Image (cartoon, rainbow, N blue to C red; front, side, top):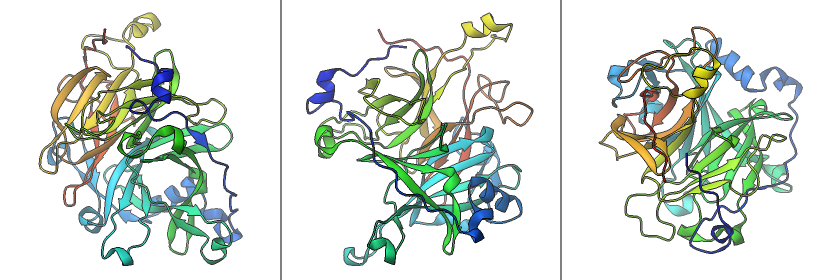
Length: 406
């Protein structure tokens, strides 16, 4: 794969690459749970609540009832959430081989401008330990106010689009949820901080990863963190890939969509510093990106370490929407060398995230060249339009021939 590293000129001159550096803001003071909350703290407590029958039942949906040529058996929300025009689903993260899914939502502001409040964002935690009877609960994303505002209202809204979710592991802080913040970078949340408040489940922000305003450019030229995802790249190790959504024919500065790669710091688990690579001129209407590290063609079988190593490579997978009434596309390959599967995903398709297989028979569905098969990678995605909202696996075609860009 041909990876072009960001040049100094691209990092310093207007009109080119804007995400120069992701800076960590100081961690906000963490509020310790009260005695009454200690047994209701963390993602594990929420999942236990769901498995005891709490939360809201979702409805399992067969693959044939979900539009798109490469979708598998998924689920949809209850009627209120499936048709809600205030809250819109966006980013996706898959945990534990896809048995637990996180889906980000943003709130649309409605009414006269003088009555509008700060729009909120939330994450739905979906428990698929019983795929035929999934359950979910909404967790509101919040940020702690500083004094004196904190005396009146300790938590405030997180006004982000939540178009991309990624989960990284920190040796110190455990599993961290990264949420794309379109113009400013990323928000960081610790899944251990999930707790139950009088208003419902809440996840307070730990810190933010910010792009410096003055060095990053202004307006349309600024890189847009529309979505994000993690994975391993050949020769680079664990990385975070962020991308931007732009329509075809966008003539604004920096109009062609870009993909940016940052290395994940082994100490913090977070993306820091300058980008390792920048890929301009990518497909329009990108909504999500995933890196798959083990895609093999037909006829390749595991026959020892050497044989397996011969067919192992990193394959980029990008989702692209095509409007509310047309199925979306799936691009596979590498930046500049895409194979496009038209109509592969439902209308209004959004983010993608790999379901890392786990040992045993519960790793989930797989795919062959045109349908289910053995040992193919699996992705999870979501669609956004009211009345047509699904959370679905993507059955990845095998046998992709990736031609590196010269």
